[in-house]
Every structure is written in structure tokens, then in C-alpha cells.
Amino acid sequence: MNKGIVVIALFAAFVSTAADWPSWRGPKRNGVSTETGLNPKGIGKKVWSGKIGSGYSSITIKDGNLFALGNVKGEDVLYCLDAATGNENWRYSYACPSGGGYKGPRATPIVADGRVYTFSRNGRLGCVDVETGKSLWSVTVGKYGADNLSWQFSGSPLVFDGKVFVNAGEKGMAFNAKSGAKIWASSGKGGYATPVSIVFRKKKYVAMFGFNALRIVEARNGKVAASCSWPTKYNVNAADPVVTAKGSKIFITSGYGNAGALFKFNGRSLKQIWKNKAIKGHLSTPVLFEGNLYAADGNTGGGALVCVSLETGRELWREKSVRYGSLIIADDKIFYLRDRGILIVCKASPKGFAKLAEAKLFHGRQNWIVPALADGRLYCRGANGELVCMNLK
Image 1 (cartoon, helix red, strand yellow):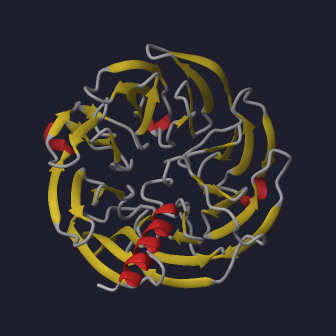
Image 2 (spheres, rainbow, N blue to C red; image 1 turned 90 degrees about the vertical axis):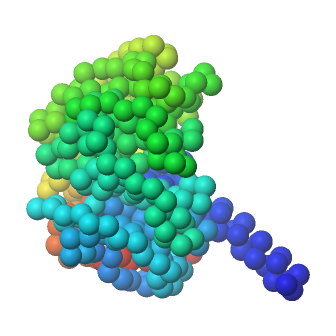
């Protein structure tokens, strides 16, 4: 092989790795990208678009490949596309009902160690090879006692500590990432939120926001280290817990007029620091950025974008005009996809709302799916199956 080609290939691999978005809400699963030098006007030109089937699953990108999940004619289809062009590399499908009013999968694929993991609305956890799309293993969480939820399983899988965690059963479940063998499981109902990893004083935990409580469980065995009751109307605890870098503080929120609260975690208990109604998050997970929470307050169909101090819970600003949506933050900018398919870009600043740009991407409603960002390209997905790639360089 030509040595020059080897050098170019290695350089390309390095660049793509630096720009990966391999899991739900990004490389650190916190909704924040470290990419800089993006278009100061906020939005560039559309690069490509395509159809991937119905669903609310977001997008992941690894080594220049994009992974997306949608439902087509009673099958969940996992697509592997070229992230730069949208060209299809492979697809893998399995039978799954599309569902009623909210059709298709909710959970986002996660890429780790040469494998892609998916979790279906009816509880199928699967693993395929990242290069070929060949199935490596699959399990059904109902086999281990997990009951499905009113709006079906929704939380994305988490790969952490050599295990795959899902929010199924009261305390969640953990499977061996390589073999799919059960490590530990719990029966009953879980929640709609995605499990969140915690490393506190060198010990590994997972935050499971269940249908009626937040539980911090030990990653190795599922033992509950701390918990607090959190009842919500219709049992919809769907926004992920927001965990600080050192794992000592955890914020949770839920909609239907409920509240948001910050807790201190010491490895044995959760102590409430503050609780108020500044953020009453229905589905969208807040993003913690430079000490402040940026979040969609309220329920779908209404809502507002708000900025709240993490330490005090004080509301710093509120913008009702953008209504409900989901967001990520990159290069000191908020990329906010409204439920009506409008992408809004504004400054990520506690000083106030300052819109930089907006663009209509999708028609209809329910387009509150979290965007993804990799290598200067923003990927937005509509509930009806449209996928759009926009250049932000």
C-alpha cells in the first residue's frame, strides 16, 4: 500500500474521531459539543436530506458513519449512512410494530467498541457489527420481568463499564456488552428517561429515572445506593437526569406542571438542595453549560426556552416565542429544534435570549427530536422520517 495513502487515512481517522457524536446527546452524553469555529450566523446551507422512516430516535455519528433508526412498514430499520453525503452503506431490520399516535422507535443507537446497540419500543435490545450490520446478539427485556410503559420503552441504551444499561424494570437492567448475557435485572416498570452514568469517588453508578422515583444504582450489581420519590402525572418521567462532572449533584425535572429539583449525592443518599417550577420539563433533557441549565420548560404544544442557575435555581431568562423543543449547545450557541420543525439558533448566555438565525426544516408537529453535531455538520430529524444535514462550518 502507498505510504502516502496510509498517512492520509490515519489523519482522516483522527479528524473524524475528534468530531464523533457516538451516543445519545453526544460524546459525553450531556448535549454539549466541543467543536468551535462554526458559522457565526448560526445556520449554513443544506448539504443533503433523506428519508429514514417514522420515529423519535436521534442520530449518532462515528468515524464518518451516521447511524439512524426508523420504522418502515412494521420493521425497525437501522441505517448506516455516509455522514458527509447521506449515501447508504448498509441497513439492518427487525420486526417491530410502528405504534399508534407516536409512531416508530424512541431510543437512539449508541456506537461503542465496533458495535451498534439499539433498543426498540417493545423491549428488544440488539447489537450489530459496525462495519457490516450483521446481528451479533439480541435479548428481550420482558423475558427478565420488565413491563412495558404506556408510551412504550423510550430511553436510549447506555454503554458503560463493559455493560449495556437500559431503563427497563424498576431499577433498570444491565447486560454484557460483548455477549448480551444478563448481568443483573429488575422486574416491573421503569421510566422513559435514558440511564446516565456517574463516577463518584472512583465508584461507578447509573442514574435511573423511573416512573415514580430517581434511583442511583451501583453499576456492577444494580444495588440501589440512593433514591428519592418523584411522582408525575401519567408516570411520565422522561427527561434524563443532569449530572455534574464530579457526580455530586443531580438535577431532575418532569412536566404536567410538576417541577425541577437539584440534589446532592454523597454515595448513600440524595439530599434536596432546591426545588421550584422554573423548569417543568416534559420530554426534553436540559443542557448544563457553564454553570447554567438551558431547557425547554412546559409540555409539548406549549413551552418556552429558559435559562436557570444550577446552584440557586434562579430563573435568569425565559423566551416564550420559541415554544417547545429540544436542544444541544456548541460553540457558545444553542441549536433548538422546535416541535413544529423550526430550527432556532441563539446565544448560550445567561444575559438573555439573543436569536442568531432560524430555518423551517420540517412540516407538522412532534418534531422535538434532539439534533446531533459532528465535523461541522448539524443533523436534524423529523418525526415523519425526514433527515436533514446542514453545514455549520
